[in-house]
Structures are given as structure tokens and as C-alpha cells.
Length: 503
Ligand SMILES: Cc1cc2nc3c(=O)[nH]c(=O)nc-3n(C[C@H](O)[C@H](O)[C@H](O)COP(=O)(O)OP(=O)(O)OC[C@H]3O[C@@H](n4cnc5c(N)ncnc54)[C@H](O)[C@@H]3O)c2cc1C
Image (tube, rainbow, N blue to C red; front, side, top):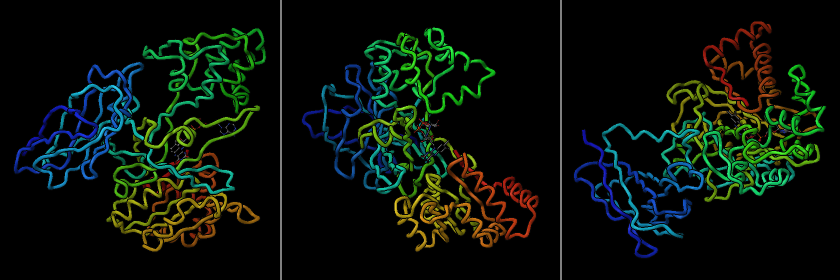
């Protein structure tokens, strides 16, 4: 068995165009992939990943990503990139590049190359997680909702080149967002702070108050510690004090609905907080999950998402969902760093492409996301079984997401049947569950052929309505009582033929 091959060198900058020197490889071996890693030299004072913006010959261009998050006030530890090698490159590799911006990066800069051998086990992709997210960038964003739609649903493509991050259809992408700068400014203003005050997070990492409010603090849902502190510090909060009685938990939940931390700062201006204590009274800003709407087999270098932007107005204030508006409003293409990692889809998986098993996919709204990934995967793997998609939204004119793609899949036979329900296109509202009951005979036939039934999307109402429609269709077309239909669905669940990804 041949071993991996390591080499190292230096990037030398003589002009703005340069190349990573030709790296000789041991002859008569087959190399399939190149990993490059560049360590930031200690003198590199500005830790901005954009100083490494490689533009090279098309064939050899290699995109580099930072190794990990930048420590507060520190520099990025380095950058890494990976790309497959073509057969002609098995003797030597050189990477022509041009550095488009280089404010103060010292050269020469150490660089190491790693070539895993073809016969060895494949390189284990870097384990990205919350502590070590993949710092990706968005390369394309398209608004899916047409003009006149009350919704704002968008399609995003996030660049994975050089990251080594991989995923399967059915997985979701975790996104670590930042808060809206206007909201951060409002909080700073309400607290009488400048934002430059030094604070520490729970791990004693130092940062400015503004950085903490932007990246660490959940500015939406107030923690009980914070509400108690308001009551203690304000002479004016007897009603809030009553709501904090554990016996009035439901009333507190009702009171908090539609309110955010900023509302309490405005309502009780006499409650004062020092920056550090404010940070410690906040819950932590959490990741958001998004069902992946692409297959790596169709898009080897990217991950696609289908995201509904959350915006609403309560108590006299416009509110923004943190992550959906981070992606829709505050992400600059090819620039803004998006910390991400993959959350495995557990049971939400396709059958093997060789298995002649029909699949029924029910994905209204953004619930369509994983099924776009499924169909891309099935086209690439020439999967055998039949496929049926239920999609629903407000109106065909403005919200028929990815319509042309479904059309192509129907023509090519990747999709066997498509049923749509556009609730406001006729007087009586029609949803996917109505279409399921209308198609009960055919649905029953597919179920009896062993079809897997998938549902994805809204957990609050849609999932229950679709579940009810599934039972009704089985009763109606299968000639069963309600109890028998319940037992039939239970059996589907046990044999993993009823798979749900609802949120
Ligand atoms: C496995 C999984 C997959 C998912 N896939 C997708 C997907 O493919 N596409 C997608 O768009 N989402 C998806 N989601 C949901 C997504 O994770 C986020 O929850 C969603 O985008 C909202 O996040 P946000 O940060 O924008 O909003 P947040 O800042 O979390 O705000 C949302 C909150 O605002 C409040 N709120 C919203 N509207 C109102 C109102 N009118 N009145 C009062 N309060 C209100 C509610 O408390 C709500 O929980 C998925 C979730 C899971 C768990």
C-alpha cells in the first residue's frame, strides 16, 4: 500500500501574480486529491480571511477557507483548501494564483501540501461542529417568492469549495447567525453603553460588548435571570414580578410572546446593567437548522437552502428572525463568513437507488427543501422506484418554487407524479392534505406497493393535517375503519415507511 505524501514550502511574493512553487510528487504513483494548508505567520497582524483571495488559472484555482473561527482580537490560525487532481498532475502540481488584496501579510508564508494516496482509505472530512464550524461563504442568492407574495422565501447556495465538508440528502445545515446591527445599536443605546467596553463570554474569552451582543447573546428571548434582575433594579415592575411566580408560568409565556429583550429595557429604563452583567444575564445565541435542498452529486461544491424570511410586527416594533434575515439581508455574496456544520438527517433517508421502492414526498412551503435534494440525488443515481411529490403554497403565480425543475423531472421520468395545492388560487382554500384525500385511490395503491411516505415542513399545523389526511386516504381507499387505518400507519412507522422532518 502506498503512503500519503507530504511536502512543504513557502509562498514567495515577488509581484501581485505568483504561483505556489511546483511541488514534485514521487513518480509512478497515483494521487487523487491535494490538500493545502497555510499557517498564518505570527507576524500576520490582521486576521481577515479576505486577505487571501486567490484568483488563479481556471484549472488550478484553489479556494482557501479559514481553519477555524478567529479568536477575539486575534488572527485566524490559517487557511486550508482541497481539490481533486487530474491525471496529468500526478507528477507535479503548481497552483498559479494572484493575490487581489494583501494589506500587510508578511511573506514568505509557510505552506504545506498533503496528497492522500489513491489506495489508502479516503481522507476523513474535517469534523465540523459548533466549536469548530466550517467558515463558508454564500455564492448565490435568489428570491423564490414572486412580486405580490406576502412571503419572502429565498434560495441560497453556499460555497463548500476547499472545505472538505460533505453531506447526504436528508441532512440539514446548522447556521450560526449574528444579530442585526440595528438591534445591537438599540440595546447599546438603551443601556447607555458605547459597545467598546471589554467583556468576557462564558468561556472567559475577551471581546468587546458590541461583539458579544452581535455574536453571543440571544437578544430575542429574555432569560428568567434577566427578568428577575429587572424586577430587582426597577422600582416600577410589580406586574412583571407577579408574572415571575412559577404558578403563573403560562401567563408569563403569553406575556413574552412577541416581546424581546429590548422591550423590557425600554419599559424599565431605571433598571441599569453593566455590560458584563448584561452579557451574563442573556441566553446564548443558538444555531438554526435548515434542510439541505441540494445533492452533492448534482452540486459537488455547494450546499443549497430554501429559507422563509421571518419578519413580523409586534408592540409597535418591526422584528426580524435572526438567522433567516442574517442570510437574506446581512450576508454579502462571497464575503460574509457563515459558520456552519452538518446535522445528520438520521432516519430521513432515501432507499437505495437499486431498490424498486416508490417514494411519496409531501413538502409544502419550505418543506420542499429535502425533496429537491432527493430528486437531484435520484436523477444522479438513476434510482429505480417511482416518485410522487405533493407541493403547496399560497399561489401558483408567485410561490411555485422550483417549478421548472419539477417540469424537467416529470419529462425525464425522475418524478412520476406532481400534485400541487395553492391555497389562495380559488375561493375555497386548498392545501396538500386535500390533494392527498382526492388522490386516495392512487395513494393507497402506492402504499400497498410498499411506498415510503415522507413529510417535511411546518410542525404546528401542517404535519397534523397531513397525518390526518393519510389516515383518511387509507380508510377511504383501503376500505378500513379508523382504528384499522391507525394500525396501518403505526405499522408504516415501525417499518420506517413513514418518515417525518417537521419543525
Ligand atoms: C430540522 C429543521 C429543518 C429546518 N429547515 C428549514 C428550512 O428548510 N427552511 C426554513 O425556512 N426553515 C427551516 N427550519 C426552521 C429554521 O431552523 C428557523 O427556525 C427559522 O428560519 C426561523 O429562524 P430565525 O432565526 O430566522 O427566527 P427566530 O429569530 O428564531 O425567530 C422565530 C421566532 O419568532 C417568533 N415569531 C415569529 N413570528 C411571530 C409573530 N407573528 N408574532 C410573535 N412572534 C413571532 C416566534 O417565537 C418564532 O419562534 C428548520 C428547522 C429544523 C429544526
